[in-house]
Image (cartoon, rainbow, N blue to C red; front, side, top):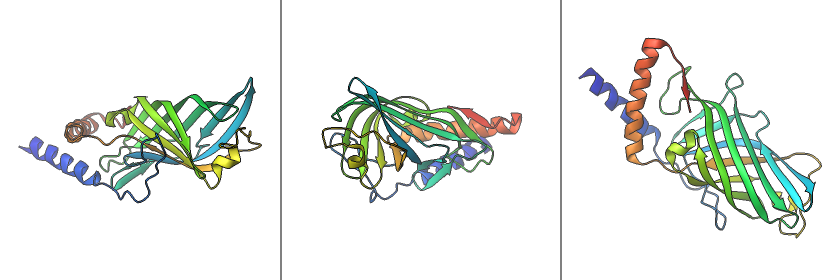
Length: 225
């Protein structure tokens, strides 16, 4: 009976944490899934390098800034002692045609489904292949095919957006000739992971109960992603 009550309590905590947020700040571009929650958000530094032979490398990193995971009405953020890393690279031709790319989010975030001080999800938080690209004046968007990591618990096909005033023209998108950066450009990044189904939430409640029991018996505080 005690075990059943603990499981029900864990499930209620997770359902409350997953109360949907407003869609007012959603980003959308043609051919790219809309931004939404759950998601990872962070500041990013963007560089564009000419590799020669009509190839340009687009690179975005969080440059040591924190990464936040947002789940409905709750969020958790990486810390200096348990950092997270965001690393996106994409290959373009000189006229701005997208060729290929990858996204990796890794490191540690506090356990997001309940308040468990000192408990972290660590390792591969999200690895994805970039499938498509679109832009407008202030936003660059990539469709993501999510391959591995914590984020794939929610699904596989979603998006990452990089936003800053005038970012597309600053990099030459739409002009027919990309413009390499002389220094990093600052932007905000939002990486959406698909909405989990109710079955996943219930399964995770049972997993949380198991984790709580393990922590009490072993003191273990890291959950491998």
